[in-house]
Amino acid sequence: MLQSVFEQEKKYYKPVILNPNTLAEIAMAPETWQEILLFHHELVNDDYTGYLDAYYRECVRRFGRHWRYMDIVNVLYAAVKTLKPRNYLEIGVRRGRTVCTAARACPDMEIVAFDMWIQDYAGMENPGPDFVRHELTKHRFQGEVTFIDGDSSVTVPEFFKNHPEKTYDIITVDGDHSEEGALRDLDNVIPYLSEGGILIFDDIAHPGHPYLNRVWVDLLLRYPFLSGFEFREIGYGVGFAIRNSI
Image 1 (cartoon, helix red, strand yellow):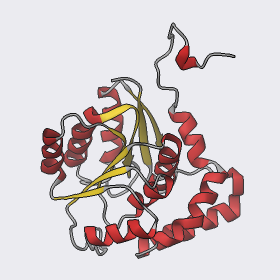
Image 2 (cartoon, helix red, strand yellow):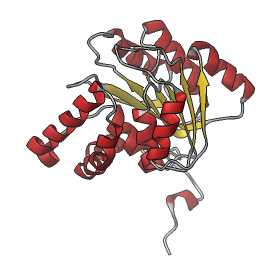
Image 3 (tube, one colour):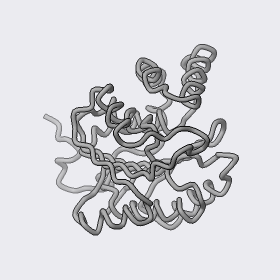
């Protein structure tokens, strides 16, 4: 019987076999969108998610298997479904659309989520962790979830000071949208991204935050062990990266 590549005595490549282009193809695959659209309407609880649900459905109807588009939802769903991670860390929860998307792809992982729960954030209600916990239950989440309230520039370093051994297989950063705050959040979590883990950074093409693209590009230059991918063509854009080594 042929040996698995992981059983080979001599290793020529790094052990991480998932690359960004492969994950992008999975995220944009028609079957991925079909799965997302089976439940995405259940995530609609404000005007923004209602708009996005209609947007996805119209694009799938018009362009079918040829549609090429990425945002935080299909990237995160594809990442979680592909990796089946032990755990997931999220900065920026709001009403729970992304954390529930992750839960649909892997309902028994551990989740830790950070938010300030600012009322009327981006002009929309921000009802708090009890609401999101209920949403997770609706989406059949069975794992352990911990919500940590407060400014992520303080709470994230404090969390890892108390849990220095922790690493996370998937991390989403979608919190502080100032240039300094976004960079700080990214710098605070990258040391705790697992080997082969996936980092997702939202809104790199958002017209209200044009500097976030620069934050992302500069970040990849500063962390050469991250192999990145960006989508900026339409929508608000998204970047993601895979950690190739420790």
